[in-house]
Length: 378
Image 1 (cartoon, rainbow, N blue to C red):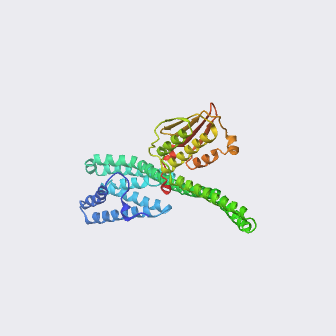
Image 2: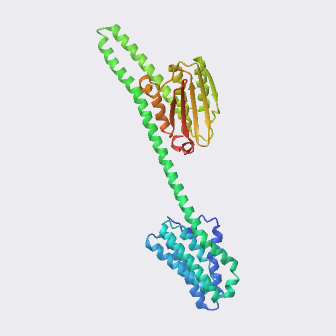
Image 3: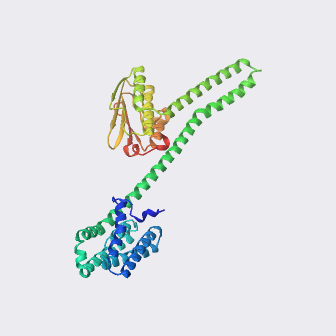
């Protein structure tokens, strides 16, 4: 909805005071006329121009072209009769706000032709008056030629920026939904099975307690162990959800590798710049999973982690000299590659595996995703 003050063009790079001067100047041009009738006609035309100019902002459809046509007619009369050419600048800015391409081109051509025609006619009818304004008239004509395109492109760019911002907000909302679904899956997989097991064993222990107390005791011990395991897994999940910095995760994985007596080398700067918390969390979790797999399954004696930040992407490579893995081994040996891929999908990342002289995992996240504002997840 346009406010009343939008009778003056917005985002033009000119102060509103300059537009007020353009609005007051026509009164000066008509007051110097010699007859009262000229002054009355001039004031009527000025009021008609601003009224129709305002209506052109708030109406839609064919009426817009009607009000613009009235403004053009007023501008022509004011140029020829009162030597006031500056209403054409108001029209130039308004035409730049017309986003219909055909309508924009039509109004632009008509306005340019009528403005030049009116100025040319004014030179013949009131030569002295127009010659005193030549520098301003030249500037005005240049404005009529260039300003509509400047405003048209600026308005189009602002519209695209608005759409991009809306898309980013929508992506953030979808990310929140996806993360909630992931948490729900993890809770179901972690707690659901163990709570069901605890329920079954509790029922069994209740039945055995009077028949076979020793077996009932064993079942209760299993229940206690299952509960402890579930509590441990929940704590690990909560720890992951709190988020981890890549810089801190590097320290942890060095400790893990050294405890497993695996020689390790860390290359690159783990302190990320301009990386959203979600991106850093995902990268840290994937790196942790990679090193855990190396310790558990690779039989490696050497591990190298390389971190590269470029204008295009964030890349982390994890290489070991172990027995090597492939995509087909993931489902059978539980290396967690699918879980890593699912996490990377949240940030449009990718996981590549090379099994040559050991295993190399390439984890990539594009910078276009890093720069998105994930407000909902911070």
